[in-house]
Length: 351
Ligand code: FAD
Ligand code: MG
Image (cartoon, rainbow, N blue to C red; front, side, top):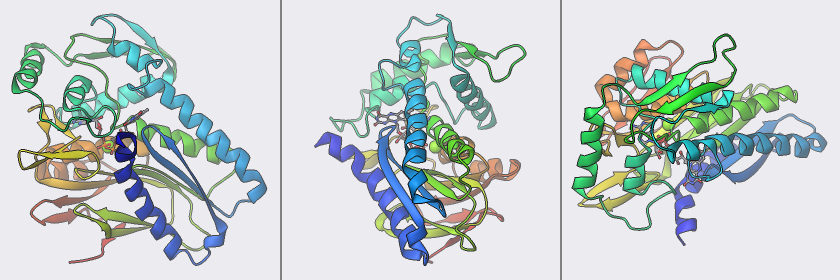
């Protein structure tokens, strides 16, 4: 039942997206889709205008890539290097594969850009809340003393505890990583999924496919169009699972990621206890925002920024989006207030 429960919301989100894709596609027979479970969510590939006889082989190659990278970046997989790093004594140095080096380097950049709102080292606090595997088995707010102890340890740290030494000359090579304090443990759940979708799209492109859409939970990467038709995406209403809040028409390569408090959460103390955590409080972020969609060139960046902006809130989030070139956003607050940046490619569907 728990296994089923943890997929219900990602599944509903995916179904909304697929429903829109199918409903709006006049040429739907040319769109071929396949969906599999990966990274604790559903990943769906859609391609347009390819020969069906090639698709099976290409789809298999894409999922193989996804699983290969998941086995590197997952903190849930006991055989992954991230798991080993998180369970080693602090200070132990690890040579990490180039893919992981890239993800952690970008994660650290977004950490700085967001003034610490994005924190790829908060696995311990995420575990305390029980968001390691979907929603927790016991839906309970962690003991205050445990959260306070984590915050106190963090306060004692002179600087941020994830240390990464990049390769000297080859920026694509393996890096050296160590955690300086045991209040730090890698949680790449808000960035690695985006990176993996980017790499999945790269596999499709290498296979000569130029019109495709890959969706994983709230993240997606889009290439090309459907002939002269755009890809059309629906963004789910954060408080009404059956409602599409906004639509986005895509005619060119781009990535879109949505972070919300409605995907992984439980109710306790009359509040929604969700999986996007504020590193300053050790509690679910209460910035007033309930849904953040970010458009960027790479899904990795869109993924990380959607989480960062969610934590930062409307004003600081807007300022960050407006500061970054090639990044657009659509933000919704609990009180109904909403905003989208001038070049965000989507439209609200309701008042
Ligand atoms: P996002 O907003 O993109 O990310 C939220 C997630 O990021 C949280 O769940 C937490 O992990 C982390 N986070 C919370 N607050 C912050 C913050 N302030 N800064 C940075 N990060 C933060 N889930 C499972 O249930 N089972 C699995 O086996 C599993 N395997 C995975 C393997 C990989 C390689 C990856 C990348 C993820 C895996 N996940 C798994 C997690 C899952 O796919 C998503 O990460 C999770 O659903 C949240 O993603 P999101 O896009 O909904 O939210
Ligand atoms: Mg994210």
